[in-house]
Image (cartoon, rainbow, N blue to C red; front, side, top):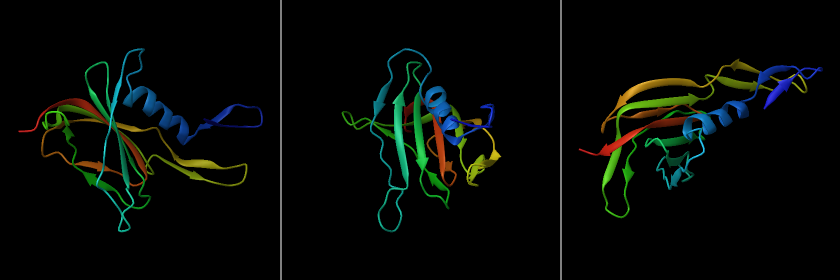
Length: 157
């Protein structure tokens, strides 16, 4: 989780540290309560049919829906539309109202290997923003990134 010097003093946090923080503090609600995970699918694929964006949906104890999206495309950002479909009723829902977005990608962190002297530059934490979402919102996923989107959902108009 950390890069240390010869005396085991922390020099830098690793990308794994930031990813773990996003999963445990942003995607999931950091409390001892039931979370419900749901199947998420993506149609973002490369020309060979490999899925480039993977999603993980979670309903948190606070009532918010949280979607963790991994853009595995190292070179290209992807713009995605998001909807939630209730398989039992066929009802389609969307993020509606205030939406928190947390993004962590190459703009925040890049590793430069150098034997035992490797380092990150840039070495920044994830970027958090709040926007309003509706049925026409398109979500931008930076290249090689982890994104958490969190908010309430409502029926698609």
